[in-house]
Amino acid sequence: MSRGKKIWRTARFLTLIALVALVMAGCEEPTMSVLDPKGTVAEKQLGLIQLSVYIMTLVCVVVIGIFVYVLIRFRAKPGDNSIPEQVEGNTKLEILWTVIPIILLAIFAVPTVQKTFSLAEEAPENGDALRVKVTAHQYWWEFEYPDLDITTAQEMVIPTGERVYLELESKDVVHSFWVPKLAGKQDLIPGRTNTMWLDAHEPGVYKGRCAELCGASHALMNFEVIAQEPQEFEQWVEERQNPSSEPQNAQEAAGKEVFTQNCMSCHAIDGTDLKTSGDQGPNLAGFGNREKIAGLLEFNDENLEEWLKHPEEIKPGTYMPSFDYLSDEDMDNLKEYLKSLQ
Image 1 (cartoon, rainbow, N blue to C red):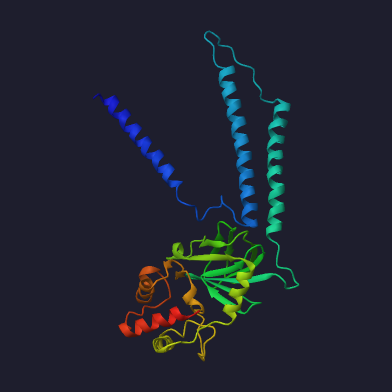
Image 2 (cartoon, one colour):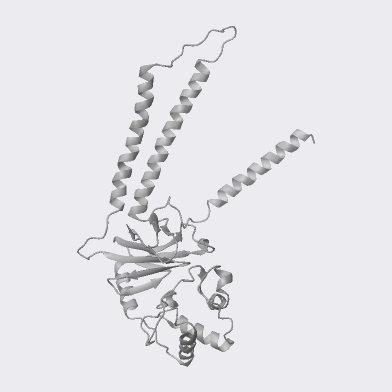
């Protein structure tokens, strides 16, 4: 086989592989895409993206069209050495290519300013709106509902069809709150409170990320926004305001004792009779209902023990200490107690 044929066969094979990879990439259900908005804010932001793409596409088509026309219309002809007509100093052309960009910028600027102000609306002062105070830590998220006396971590629960107004702060370094399907990112800066709002049109679990490089485990600083029907959300509020956090059997009682001796200085648990509680780590009330451990591990017995024994290996830079010194019995009791927190 000639060298040319080998190259041609290799090129065809690589092209086929690339096409298959492209098709396969589209088979996975998108879970974090700004192109699939599920809330008002995300829809408005996608609208601006589409508008900018349309304008840029129009400009490219016009410029390339003119370029091709000039290449064909004014190409050099055999034997013709004359200098073509020059257009420099043409007042009409100068005005034309000055006015057109101004018009295009105006078309883009007006809706951008309009939507920017609408997205910056703050919670009404009458107190009817649902407010959530979001606090970012290295490397976890805290969600406090000041009007409902509820505090959660890693999971923010909201009702569908209702605006939720967020107050965003950071305890340490600059972080950024980002839920691609619901809203674009907003920075959380130490010593400053930023605000934003979002909503969800339909129930679902929407993945969120920290969008600002914040340290060794920045890429693992995940959270979820869980949107529920209003009735279901009201039920969640009632459950969270009356948590079931007391042991129901001997093993859970033993686990609570292990927790008291090892974890209480950093973690609070609503609904317990513990006399003191820490606030350096997430509030663990309702821990047994969470979908993830540390915001990234599937919730199961094996992962819970792995997290308790080796948190630094799972999330580098975390302040969570290792509890690998616990006996097997104490570890089992502690896990049962944590899983019992409802």
